[in-house]
Amino acid sequence: VQLVESGGGLVQPGGSLRLSCAVSGFTFSDHHMDWVRQAPGKGLEWVARSRNSGNSHITHYAASVTGRFTISRDYSDSSLYLQMNSLKTEDTAVYYCARDLSGGHAFDIWGQGTKVIVSS
Amino acid sequence: DIQLTQSPSFLSASVGDRVTITCRASQGISRYLAWYQQKPGNAPKLLIYIASTLQSGVPPRFSGSGSGTEFTLTISSLQPEDFATYYCQYLNDYPVTFGQGTRLEIK
Image 1: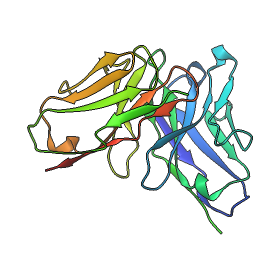
Image 2: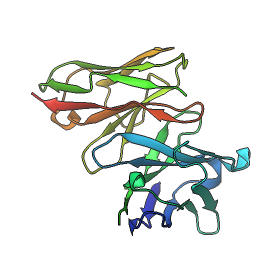
Image 3: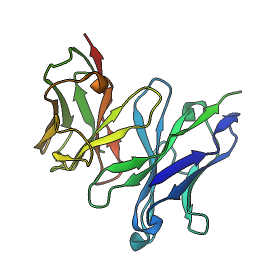
């Protein structure tokens, strides 16, 4: 079971970036999947959720990113995505994808994270 | 939104000590609380879910308890590898929320 993020980097304020999370070792469609971020020296902040196929892939977002970020999944390449638009300096963080522990109300598998820096 | 407040924010302890971290919710959340451990440069690791269920592979010196608005994470006998930051989390509604973290350091 593995999650591997990619796509982070340096972007100017107002710019866009798409993060990817490659999924392997489990049935992707069975699990809700999330993005969680951690600003430098700060705590964990939930960003977005893509619910599983049984829940029609309904999405949820933190208020701080609603209207700017879009979570999606692609079963053809077993990947979770986070499209980030209109980036702000306060979006600077390490972004983790995480798997929901079915019925456990927790994240049982995490990726290693990808760093996003929003700066001019 | 549910707010989670951890106490203390910082804890200094010695190997072999018993330590307890508290997480208080702004309103009742039944037992929908999880605990994570995070070491510098690493992703968080799930320790406890549904307030008291030990995640597979986690040593039994870790335990969780509580319901409603008050929860605790206890480490019965600190080991050198336990010095890290600990977070509680609520995940039964949106937004998902985390506590601010408790940093556990060696005395």
